Length: 130
Image (cartoon, rainbow, N blue to C red; front, side, top):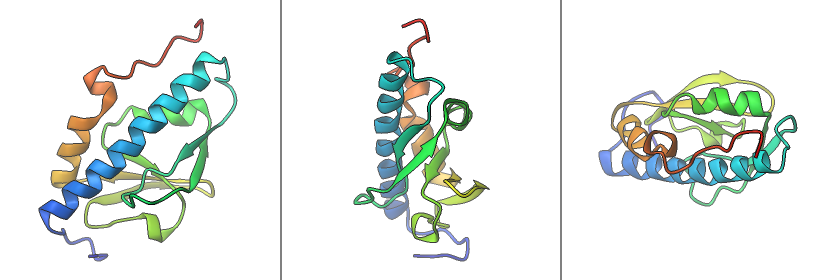
């Protein structure tokens, strides 16, 4: 794994972007269910969206943080540790004690945009009224 900001091979980069996009889709569904249950003000426990397919760590975001994250199709939330960060396909946008936000770049960014459920209309967050 290149940690110096250089770019890895395209196939591995694509696999990382697809893995993170899969976890983003799962989190979209978790958030939609919680919103339907009128838990908008409560934090969501979400799955780390890192490129490790076997990652099971949870991150906690409130609804405002989650919606801010989802305004960007190339942004993903990861657990706050270097083992979840892959410099060859992403850069760190923000860090706090509970999670980090990363942004995909180059080919991984294109794949993330293509797989973004909000840009495809496949996941529509319900209105707070239910």
